[in-house]
Image (cartoon, rainbow, N blue to C red; front, side, top):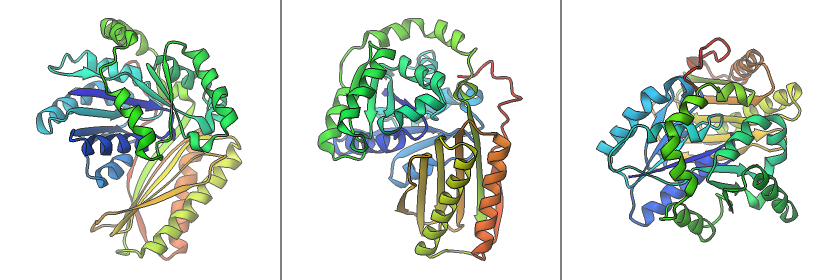
Length: 363
């Protein structure tokens, strides 16, 4: 089994990229399984990935810094035993240090497990904003990578692409730099995937295997969530009104997402991060997301049946107060659904307090 860790800041396109990789491998007759880690106790992207038919497992018990070492070995071992995939793809939360996650798996000494080069996705369309808002954290993700993949090149002016490439090359001159759009056709992506999972030997990968334990011990002194300077909050609500028409649900999701973004812009006009909504209407799952002040919300729908309509919200925003973010999210959800005559009940909330928690075991 080959383990592939695909990291990158929030909203860099990890889930879309992983779905495309998994689908491509499936068409080639290879079986892929996926582990998704969220910043809260509420899974969001795992729902989407499972909707596409992949074997997926979510690690959501709080933050990855507290549960990674305890849960990851068991999860990897069980996936290998139960699914026996040829490729295991791991999507860490966008505010983790992906290199530390891979090093932890290396130290598990699992039989018949190999490693692909560590990939960090760089969102070319937001590179300047991300580096301004989360400079120390984002630099660390870039410096650790063996492959730096500039994603969303379809959204970048052609003259600006070499500027992004030059900037990340200065931070990590040893990494291989690739460009693509995760939403492009397979003609563009297939070369990236084949190269990524081929038999190329990366000297830094071999070095990390030798020095993993030493680096892990040093890196545990750093807390990725505090380093990222992000406020995070995740919550889930159930709807007591039964199934909703798709058009009505999509309208509610749009109003909620745009309203949240407008209010967050008032708190931080240059915010980056990720606001994600998964709205299970009963027959359709609506996923809406926005990754910063300069982006419009993106929405997609997947057929998905559920007896209980619900809405999950994951918010991670740079340079704002967590208490303000929590108050804003809860207020908007309740107000908008009340205005539409829909009763909701909060069923889950991410209570993990990073400010008061000991992260000596963190990543």
